Image (cartoon, rainbow over all chains, first blue to last red; front, side, top):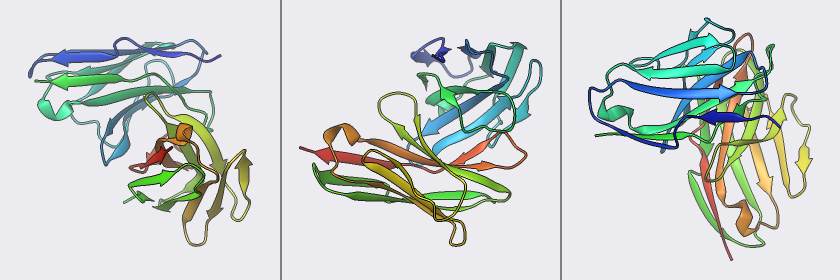
Length: 114
Length: 111
């Protein structure tokens, strides 16, 4: 049974703080993804990674960076949090190759920036 | 610019009703269209559609794709309160590991 875990379910941070969101998967998946989900906008891809130390920008990478030092872990970093980054953040992973539909999602982190 | 548009944005029905959710898309390098169900947690996969006109079924849920008119529908028959969720449509692109998601349709099924 695939498991994708995220470090926090709820997080409250102040404007200007550096924020780390951690995601870990236990299925040896090559591909990992970070999305944010906002009402009326659906899921939007921030970054994805198809291998250790590899990363690709998604649709909305501005204000975010990522780190993939180990295969099982994909971190999303907000260098200086802003109120417009208040959102639900979802991490996902998928098996190797081009078939990305088998994405397994984590439970999400609801981040509030005040 | 790639677009995935779902309609309606929200829908309220009563148990036993049949509903049809719509997803239209304009995406370059289309590979497949996917439907997800999202309750109070992460989305779960429902269907993947790659060919036009072939219906996929799972219990009371079914879906079909029209690649000429660039849309898909998700049907739910004999709805139950447990069907209440946000239904997300996503388009998977060739030679890429990302998907374009629609905004979702929030379905509420009342007893």
